[in-house]
Length: 419
Picture 1 (spheres, helix red, strand yellow):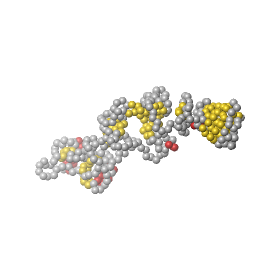
Picture 2 (picture 1 turned 180 degrees about the vertical axis):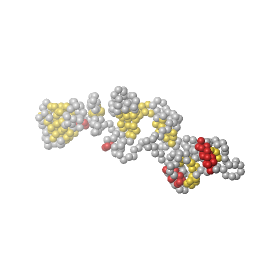
Picture 3 (picture 1 turned 135 degrees about the vertical axis):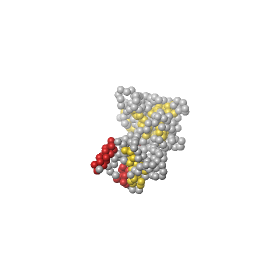
Picture 4 (picture 1 turned 90 degrees about the horizontal axis):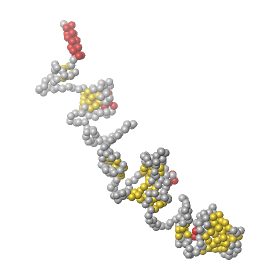
């Protein structure tokens, strides 16, 4: 009898090894098919999945992928490790790494791909070396709070303050005030500004910068327009900074700054450092001469601005017929533009020297008279050379000598002069 039972049990196991198993059914439809014991009445039917709390699920080891559990408590354990998704009671399955919640029909999966939502807490996305790319193909395809920031994917434009940008970058505001570009780092030589550059022919490597110089001593420049050519074979044009405006029609260029420093007002081809194509109004003094570091001269009342030829700065001159300047000196003195065409009287009792500076304009002339008993010596300064047939000193009391500057660094002494 025992041999017969063992034989029957062995045959049953063999059948289980090669066939499907059914519970309450003789025709299983899958590897393991469970039918209800009764289909009517009030008796409980169903499959009971192992019930554990979150701590148990979190500390289990050697878990096979597809293992299913029912978490009946989250009082213990934490949202971490393989239990990072266990935030409520319910069914979970193991995907090989973490427990994954089985969503019920009453609570469908909600994410940014199929529904709107509200953050329940602050979130941080740590990308590391991974990229996050948005590829909109419509206007306002990506936005932040309406028009605060908008990306026009259809036209490859970005709008700040507008959802319909009309340029690669448009900044628009309806609030009175400035639209600043600000650098707040405490770095002395950091120049805040807007950089504009080109990479295609004929703008290979050209750059322009509009900025503010908060610390001139550090060597920064408030406005810079320049070109850095990176291709010897390309044909580059000028890297100009242009200010233009339009009242709805074609934009009119009002100001042009060439990359070599020439500035044009009313012209895009300035021929000098300042080229005004139109009228010019000056409401204060007009200074000429000087150099890059020193101020020029604004002349004296009644003088007129006179050309000194190409390459030379004009000078203030006293016109013919104007009041002749007369000046008396008693000690060493230096002639000025105001002395041109006039007389300088020496009434001192001690010998003195009158200096003719090389900064006087071409055409300067005046007469020096020894009215007193002291002899007067006339010398040039800087690069000025004074030539004379007889000398550079007055001969005696009441003698007069003239000084004429007839070239850039050459003058002549005339009259009653001696060595």
